[in-house]
Length: 168
Image (tube, rainbow, N blue to C red; front, side, top):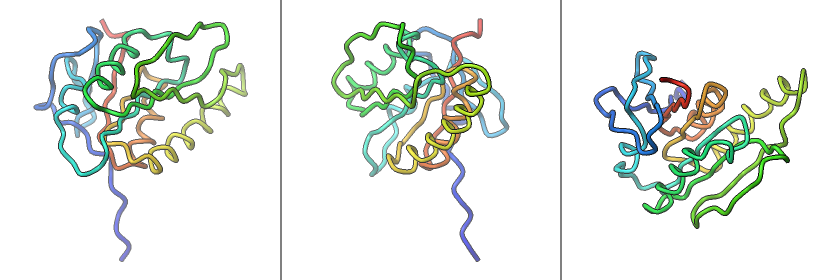
């Protein structure tokens, strides 16, 4: 019999910790319940033989979310290799990134039906990135980043974290 593919590991509700960047966050528990007040500090303490790589995935321009850049900086300062994955919006100015942060753009943002096609392609690309980069953890930012993050985590066999900036 063929072995079943590994499901992405998720943090349990007991692994929740205070948020690093001050925004609302959640970790998807085994029963699919979003837990608030949980973030990357639990991931930072993980031990494994694999390289310390983590992906932060947004389906928009990463420079639109300063808390995301701040979280990437914290992770990079603590020795993580961070892949910040998103879409390019030409009108958004870019700033410098810290050493250890790789900015990866899938494409520029499309409109209309092309956006829906782009999202499907982005899902597949994230799954491929996850498999090839072997992340230890993948963080999906906002609702449109949740599915691509799940694909990347599944491809890598990594932990999955969901962070929502819009919860109050």
